[in-house]
Image 1 (tube, rainbow, N blue to C red):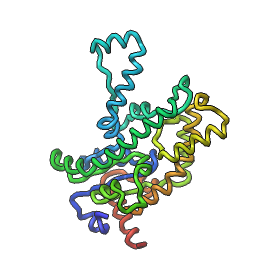
Image 2: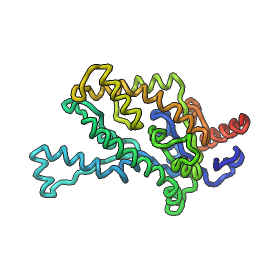
Image 3: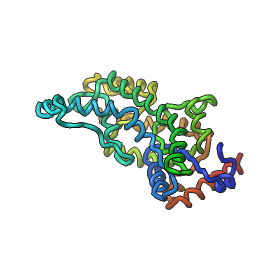
Image 4: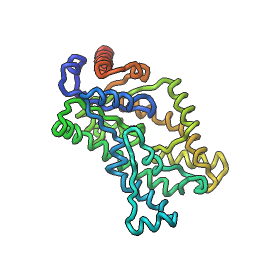
Length: 289
């Protein structure tokens, strides 16, 4: 790790961390808090994906839908209107909408082959956005004068790295430049995330083999064809399984850094509190090592 002890962390003038874990446990909240403190640069991996690497796919999808409307079609064909996504750190809906859900097109679903294509696009984009992190550390310092840097990763980071491989290029690049910090949720957090997702199912990225196995099992268990699948029902059915699938992958990533709990993160109120939390985690790791 780039910080050998709590003392080393506290004394460092360049505090650099990457937060990872399930979506909804506080990564973006803490990142916003640190950014608002005035001393931290906030790098959002999902924002980078949605703007730099998938922005054109997203905009083209909007245009494709607009072309179906005669009024908008005429305006687009004459360059009379401009269509683009308004993605922000706190509103990633354009990216989620593009990623979509597989199933019946009449219910807003995508053909599974198209869904797999968009999943592949997201995987490539996420890897590129993660590998951009060291460059943004330099940019944050050289252009804006930020010494402290927080990388707010997406919940799917564990699906695009192989943390059990000591030579994994993404994990290596990240761990050499940032302190990897897992925000670990409890069983009650998992239950609440499942309840929240059930109320408002959202598109998400899945590891390819897991997705194929889940899709095949869903079709068989529900005795339906691809065209009969309710997109929301499928992602609801898959979500809890995806969380279970991700837990050991997060745990493997944590061996490259530290683990803090979601309860501890919820108590952080300012940058000083975050510094204390990481120092405590470093002390605990040193004691138990």
